[in-house]
Length: 325
Ligand code: CP
Ligand code: NVA
Image (cartoon, rainbow, N blue to C red):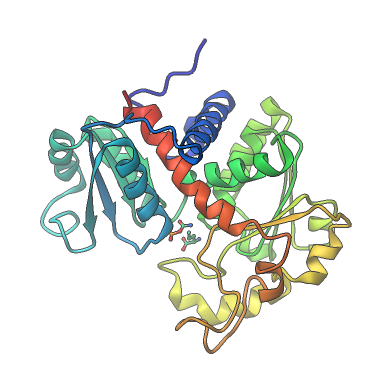
């Protein structure tokens, strides 16, 4: 059966089959090649797209806007405090109103329940641009970048190190199992994924041949890894835990020693960004590099800006597949 995602929401990878995820990656690759070779489509011609952001964003916001512009759609940014949502108006009412105006709605915020409720009542496709639980559009960009490097996803040895219970680790674990990868979550015991998620990962793995390891031992976790991935140690909304996290996660920093521990020469480094890799930002000026050293971030194994570019091509694919002509 050919894959058809027309009218579907994109809320979490758990809702998608491996062939549907592969379809989105193949479409992303095609849209990327077409853009780079000057072939322009207008696959979202005349569509109106709402972009709701409760949290800050550079890549996700800009990826949606540029993808809309490329394909002839009209994006409308609705930032924190811009609309009645969450203050005077319920999620359900907002969903029903926006669904009458817009052809698709992106939501970035705290609660996965909110994005699921928007989807329940909007009557148009809703896309998750990050919640505390999942960041599914990011995973498509990550997987496209891995495919560009290694040509496939199945059996790729993938080590995620750092906060093993945040939205990125959770999404990568589920996405990795869907695509039959060998995923290691390398984190302190107190920051490993919860039992519910582990159960889901196990069920998917049994069907796809995916494998996963949860370990607090860095050497064991990164051995043989083709991809080392990390994310910030303190996610948006968790700033109160700054000191505690920094102390806990220090041994999980991606540095040259960790890259060497893979025992491979072709290992690549990925990060969803933004990253604390030097002391050049307001937030990092007192702490310097945290989850990744400057050397690795700027080094030859780093693919972080290809990955960031791929946010745009993959988000475009999600919109084209769900509301496109
Ligand atoms: N990776 C990512 O989601 O980046 P932004 O927070 O800048 O959107
Ligand atoms: N875990 C990070 C991801 C940012 C793209 C956060 O939620 O802040």
